[in-house]
Length: 432
Image (cartoon, rainbow, N blue to C red):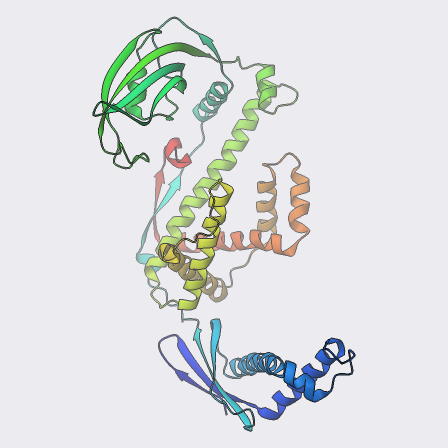
């Protein structure tokens, strides 16, 4: 009779057995199947004697049959004992005699914890807010103009937003350091491509002028030879070009995607896009605030197997991202332990969300799913094709349904916590 013992808070051990005769029958069936196509010298396929088959394939057949029998037996015991298994079991076969009537085994595994939430009503939450204004539209148009600027040579001192061309030589203790020398090097002042102190030294210089100055590199600078050290730069300014901004006219409107060149539509399109982005970012911030509350008030032990699996998943995801950015990760592996904190939080949130959805019967209403799909589709040239794409595959639609469920959980938290609205600046909201 199977028995389940408690090893720790979440760890359990199932002790059970499998009838030997059932295993023998499975082994015989497997050998018969193998015999139909097996090729052995001196025998025709399908004509290999049972004894010879057993000599060559018996161990393989027994291991496969035992593996399947263990999984079936474990699944039946889990159902009988109403166990909520987290992760995969670790089997240990105790019987070594293949002639024994019963094959005894144990399976060690974890179960899902009982989710206990603390008092959400006692928690303070800052709900981010923002009201889009005309200034935001104007600033976005100004940014688009800067992005499409042309440049013309000018006879004046270099200033912010100018393109300049320089020669420079950097020395450390009188010796030119690696990467410290260049000819006709282009720099856009204010772009952040160079260190702020370096750009500041260029500002105010005129063509033909040379300047020397000292600068200390940050401790975190990627060039280890000069990181945290005082160096001397000599700069010669060869060229200054000032930006020439395009007029906001039909040609400009066409350049940013308004096919008929209607400037009025340009402003409407920018407002619509900004509005969607503001809503998306507010949702993201408020979701994070609500989830932090849930993580804080919920106290329970996490299944180690789920945390380990999530650590591996995050590691693989990070390595793929690095590969896509051009970094070679062949033969390398990041330490999974780097991802433990993130993995623990994600696993904990996943368990909390699933529990809240079940206990409070939160649903992904069809109309909200449709609205979210349609809103997302507006970012594409042919929104109707994107909507059809989502609804053509249940797995793709499930991703949207999960987002709607998360929104429901956020609303559930904000309806109970002590909420105070906090108006953000546009740059803060956009992460600039």
